[in-house]
Amino acid sequence: MSDCDPIIFSPRSGQPMPAQSARSGFEVPALTTTFNRQELTAILDLYGRKVAAGAWRDYAIDLMREKAVFSVFRKASEFPLYRIEKDDRLARKQGAYSVVAAGGLIMKRGHDLRRVLAVLEDRFEVVSR
Image (cartoon, rainbow, N blue to C red; front, side):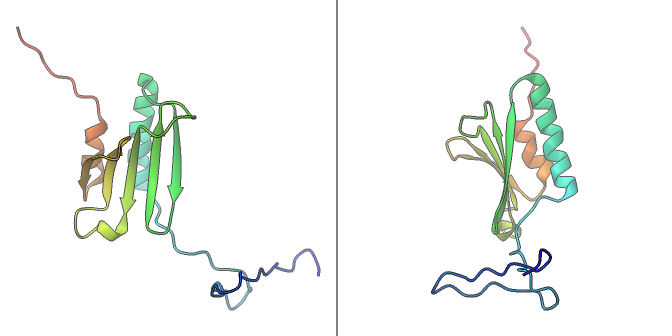
């Protein structure tokens, strides 16, 4: 076996074989839900403003088969303050995007990511005497 030969792993007993490319023999990765460039730009713009304000310090991105999750942390060792989720299965029904608080409460859900992210923006109210 040379250094350039692909390594083919056999599945555990009772599991189906993974899909392989006809030409190379390499395993084709399973389809995952991801954030596109515009979505990630909108999320990172909000994240940058919150980091500059000192409210957020760390983030994590989880890309799974059914949904993509952008988690926001106050400290790296804590549980996430908010999760910004994209679930393509809900795109036609309630909207693919949602903001979930730390306790699991869905704060906002919708079809437009910028409108969903608006729930996390700081709101300044005019107080009159």
